[in-house]
Image (cartoon, rainbow, N blue to C red):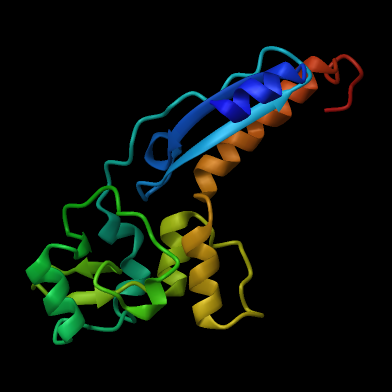
Length: 182
């Protein structure tokens, strides 16, 4: 609120919202605060869309055979015992948020529970699929750095929807449409 107030005092038109990725085509629950400060009035955030209704297991189908089974590990057992396990179940249509600590296999790491009650560790490529970041090339960094980047990232579909709105706002405000720039 203080930041928005200061931006308004500087003459900007300020719009602020907390967006949750599943409302914009994302597969993980990932709430993020966004502030758009513009010299032009009239910015609107993207319209929410229907949440995913397809089980996440279907999106991860190409990864499941490769994911490491961690059912037997003490970390997984402790996570289940203390209630910190963050699971993608066969029924899940929205996945919990990935964190940058994912590669450390902590108690709150994201795992897939299979139909036969095995627990599979979500790796970098599967994380990219969940976040809508498959097109991002992370080949030049270690798997741990890759996971940290993905865990700190915004969800691809939500970010894309927001950036389309920012672009549209700029184009309308500058009459770019009439100048045939788009």
